[in-house]
Image (tube, rainbow, N blue to C red; front, side):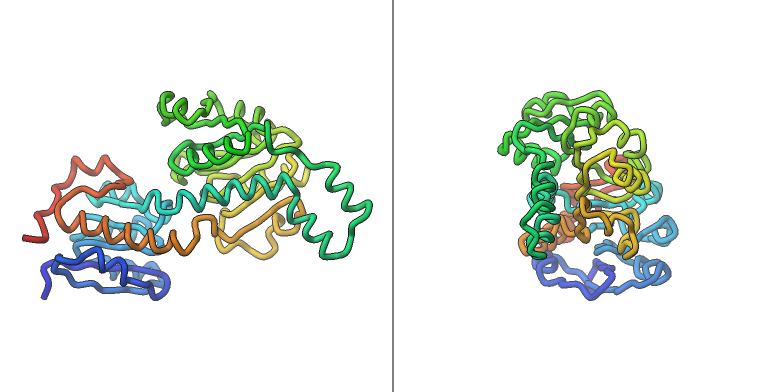
Length: 337
């Protein structure tokens, strides 16, 4: 029997080949648990040294059942499905795969900007219906430019900075609200930091969300923000649905306080088919797919395996969500000789 035990919990049968490939030279047992309930997750996390999580919710009740694992490695950039505060209280590291989908999400955000500005969905629908006349001209006559406009980023992390770089290539000026980013870093990316969310809303022709979901950012953007936006502006969200008051967004769209939106994430997922956003021609929706590509899927598996290997080999992970936990734990002895 191996000295180390790894439990991989997932919502469906996962592909583990690339993960295991990164663990060569380590003596371990690797068990997969497909979890459809909180109770199944609570049982799966017991008696192991490391937990790999592929999309399974881990509230405090699950975290509290961890009796020996020192870390949870998540197959995601976001980590809102894991109660990282409870993990810290239990001296458990939470590790995400930051960076594996930076290019994909930033590309998706830029795609949404362009598709909204060029009214892609509406014109596609009209063209397929054979409508090349007055109805189409009315849509095109109300089309905003892209170049020389201002993009406001809520969050200037890895993905936000990638969006800034790509937007600037299109001739778009970029401003950002992020109280945790050093001014020198913003200057390096030619991004102007603003002092408040409402200032960003009032100055932006496009707003794009790029902040993690946590207790501080839940419904960060709501009625006051949308009231501050230009009537000609568009709102883009490719981070987490919970960062936005979805009802306030729907109201802003219904009352024409903003021109439209590009939404990849929702407050509840899968969201209901009768969500009012689905009935709006000026809203583009995608199914939380911004971070997806063949390359990103492979990169995530490799990164998860590499982080697991670091932890089992007695070193700190590269992407620690709760760094305050360092003071509470000792890194385990090396797993290899």
